[in-house]
Image 1 (tube, helix red, strand yellow):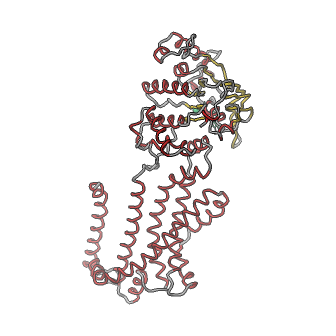
Image 2: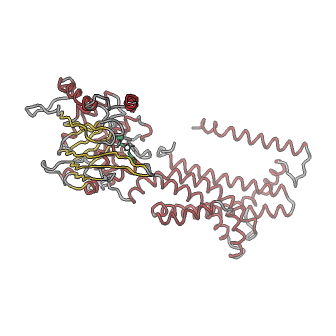
Image 3: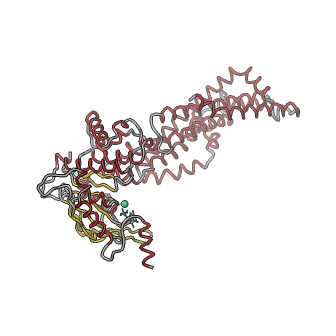
Length: 290
Length: 256
Ligand SMILES: Nc1ncnc2c1ncn2[C@@H]1O[C@H](COP(=O)(O)OP(=O)(O)O)[C@@H](O)[C@H]1O
Ligand SMILES: [Mg+2]
């Protein structure tokens, strides 16, 4: 599959975005969703996108995935055009909504990409069971998605995104629906899988601690039109001597809290106004502006 | 399971029995003439004495309905799949079929009768097939066209072909719609098969029995054949529902 056949050389970045702009136009009005996005994600790097809702995080992921054409600029994925990368199935995408097929069993849902790409039945069954075990849902293999909670459905969708061990994982707020305990466990699993398969991850989140915990770099975006406000280097998983730290180590380390503060300040922006979080925050910005 | 069946079947049965009792009471108390409205007891007597001939007639009508239903359904699924896959086909065919839906299709029966010999069942079966075609086509097409944005993006991210999308998402997603169409078509096919017989041709079905009994002023006999048609329609409907249940029990319907 993609990791075996087209493994990117270490020098080859997973994603290169050059002067990306995206304007949605239709029915007489147009929305400038992204402007001047320059970003390079190295192979195996974990990059989070964080920013106020509506700043274009999902749009940016879709542009990388070749699900939306950019209005301007160029996208390279593993050194190929975004289109070539999509046709070559070089990334896995975990969408904001789980998007499972309700008439298929949980197992058959995870098998979907493997089935579409012609893996034989026994092999894909084995692989799907392994993935379900990893997201803690092996006991639910024979159930249908409507019988599962929202968080469980999201875990099935994550297993499905990981099925082909892609060299690039694009994830749009994948842990948003999970409870805190499951969320931390999934974060650790994700970090482990990404490291094992040396996959690069572009990860959209609303949670500052999550971004700080997972990321090598946190890309802080600002609102309207969406642009990169600041990139915060974190990289807490790697010690200076090259060994890696465990989850609890990081979550209790002073550097973790320092990183959180740094991201939070970046989100507030230079003028000290809060920009992140819910739409309520945006309403309060609007009120203050009046 | 049994309990659920009882709970769902009891109200209509109780209501039906009540209506028949009131009907009987009304007809006997007011001395209603049998050509206006025969009593249920008179209809039942006619049904019992004629039951073997009604059964034979129901077999003929039922066969016309079945053949027309099967042919119409198969054609509808094929054309709907074609229209879902090809924009031009959709643009050309769908408005015509929508217009057909607004038309009383049995109105074609006398015209078709004249085109074929008077001993042919073909014109009847054609009318039934057209009647069944319309609801199946409309429903299946609606089901096939439905593709949620998240599923569309998912399949695009897999670089899946249009055929793969049809096979893995559109067809299974359209299954509940197909059965909705089939249920409607099953009832319509019996109605069409009976009514086409009102316009002459072979005298072997329930519709012919109804018209000949009426012209002989044998009203309880006519009503007995109507009862036969009702039972035949019920049979078609129940078979369609049971098929649906069997097919859907293996999966959870997305629209529920
Ligand atoms: N398909 C679309 N058509 C028109 N406008 C869109 C479309 N998708 C997103 N937008 C707009 O682009 C902006 C960015 O949206 P999105 O990328 O979903 O933001 P985020 O994921 O950061 O919350 C929003 O203003 C949104 O309304
Ligand atoms: Mg979003």
